[in-house]
Image 1 (cartoon, rainbow, N blue to C red):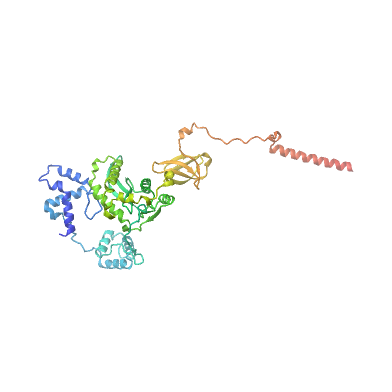
Image 2 (cartoon, rainbow, N blue to C red):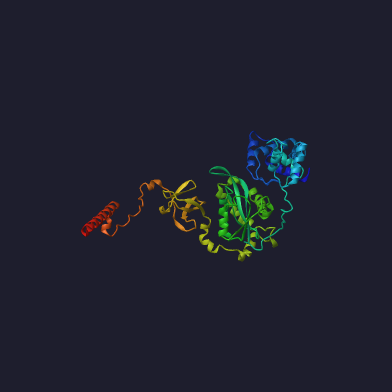
Length: 455
């Protein structure tokens, strides 16, 4: 038994502790204990998961009953190292992969199917991956031109660099049933201090912006923010916020987790010292969970000596020592809420309304048929104001109330003032034409009479 197998077997026996210590179980007791064990979180060796299913725990228990401790060691497949893929196709896979090591499983499948070597959808990704793994070709390989020189680094002072990332958390009970939660965190590079962290029900740009706002209010403005390359961090709203606050937004390269190693190390500590100690049965709601998170962060993590800091320093001590280098909010604090509002382009309808988030809002009626920016607060799902496309204030916004509008007095355009000349007030095109025609007749008759007198 090697070291890894022994470690895994010891972990499984630890999980089975409440069962293994019992000489006998009454009817229905096994199912009850297994269900309770499945609700706990675990630091599973060589795995990022934190939960075990009831089926897995029960299977381990029966293995232990039949074979004791040795039966809990991982069993290798009988066909390990042997592939069901024919030798001719294996040779083709090796040629394709070696010709371009960066080819993905989907690309290899497509090339094999297009060449006619395999029928469509007959070669599974799992089989292909196992074959490449056996030949030590499953890892993503970069060409020499793409290879990046990596160096360990640390910011000179607190507040220079923050790291942002999301960690998948456990399931909790909410008014809408069981929901998975996500830990969104921002960590200061130099001090390892958590600028802010919060459990959210999603990992969207909106969740990240909410955590960033609280971090700015608590810890000032960072010089750079290094984040993942996911779509949530690529959202235009987050980029606009960072641009307005003069924060340089830096994206890690895809498939390069080494670029955010400090935050990954925090996640490991968080799983070991918070999630493993958390009693989910006592959690009432998301707010209750976040209250415990913030207390743990301030009272435990920030006060604990960090191995990555010099001279046995704690994160909060390192942060306080560098306060002179931290850039405060300053003038940005006066309108910080406005920086986190979203602006969406809309055209005002004939009835003076614009739509957003499946609802209608009334804007000043003078803006009908114009393109405007509807300024909204996405965190509480309300519209705040309306601006021109250049950012000028155009007026307030109200949620449309059709019943109230039924009794609301309409604003009608004012009638043009009457002309000061009383004669002009009676002028119309018919009278004007008649007078002009009569005048021409009189002139014509005068001309005739004058000609007769001359004769």
